[in-house]
Each structure stands twice: as structure tokens, then as C-alpha cells.
Image 1 (cartoon, rainbow, N blue to C red):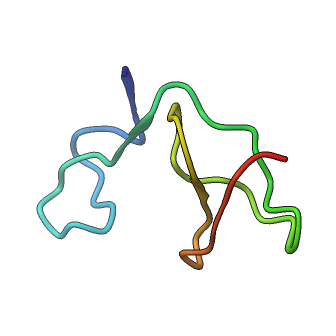
Image 2 (cartoon, rainbow, N blue to C red):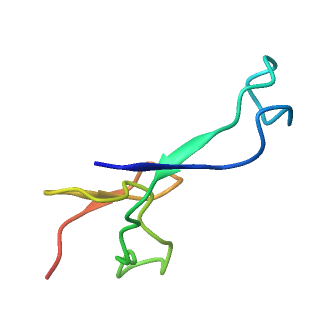
Amino acid sequence: MGVEWGGLPDEHQGDGLGWPMLCPAFRCDGENPMTGRACINGDHQGYHRDTTGAEWLDD
């Protein structure tokens, strides 16, 4: 799986150390059928997961 930069190396983004955040290069386009929230797992197999921690499978 590839990654892409979430910011510049000198930007402070949540970790307090000044390191950029990494996120999956291939985002999952799945949406939770009950809530409409997007999957945050990136490129994956199996269960989707949203920011609330809810898991679901494709129908």
C-alpha cells in the first residue's frame, strides 16, 4: 500500500513533533449504509470502518 503526505514536514499536525501526517494513497470509496459516513481504512479487504469505529461489509 502506498502513502501520501498530509502536509509539509514543518507543519505541526496533531502529533506534536512536527511530522506530517500520512494517509493511504488509495482511499476507500465505501460509505456506511446506515449513517452515510465514509470508510477511513484506505485500500483494504474485509470490513469497512468509519470515524466512529462502526464496521460494515459491502452488500
